[in-house]
Image (cartoon, rainbow, N blue to C red; front, side, top):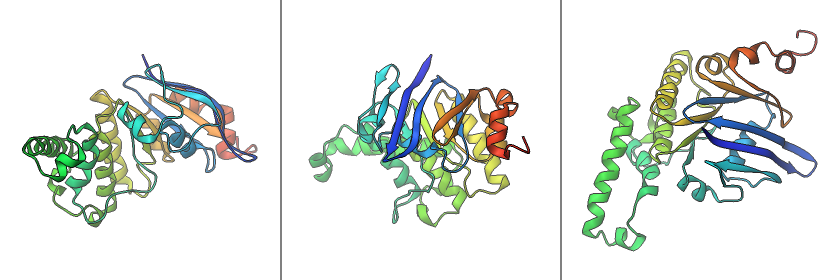
Amino acid sequence: MEVLHVHNLSRHFGGLKAVNNVSFALKEKTIKAVIGPNGAGKTTLFNLISGFIQPSEGRVLLNSINISGMKPYQIAKRGISRTFQHIKLFHGMTALENVMIGRHRHSKSEFISGMLNLPWTWAEERSIRNRSLEIMEFLGIAELAESEATSLAYGQQRVVEVARALSCEPKLLLLDEPAAGLNMRETAEIAKLITKIRDMGITILIVEHDMSLVMNISDEILVLSYGEKIADDEPLAIQNNREVVRVYLGEEDA
């Protein structure tokens, strides 16, 4: 079953075609990587899918429902959550509080009820806290719950951001360069976490430059170059694709 279907998606900034006529599908409970050189349009593609920018042309279908043109919070409610290339945690808040923020999209209490601290909001807040702690336990960072999020080691902050995205209970998780800035040990750990998340039934679309990570965890790989799709296949086929090799290594080396 296809969770995501991107159909002829384009985003033009004046004469620059950041994403141009890109189509692909993402099957349920799989990991699909998006790779390509710098400036290939990978993050722009993520921003289009998650509603941070609007397409010039084309459609994005989530479970056969057209989400093109929706705002990010509307898309999040329909089941897409994401992390960012540059970590975006809230300063002055604990790791647990950062994770709980993602969970609040499931809150039924209205703003006034929360502000007045009415009794029925207490149980809901405890539920949000407990579920957030369960997610942190699942990712192996429960002991960091009361630490200030932005004071944590860089690799730990990455996992907190993933935990916050998971707390939304997404059907589709977008990971934008989760291994950026990590050492080899941390990269191996994040790879295990990503496959663990996939194995719990969450579909994952990942942008990543670390080719070892991509080849080890991906079920399929989409390759972009200058905003256009040049390949979309299983990892072994991508490794042997002459056009992909040419884009990465140059014409002579290929």
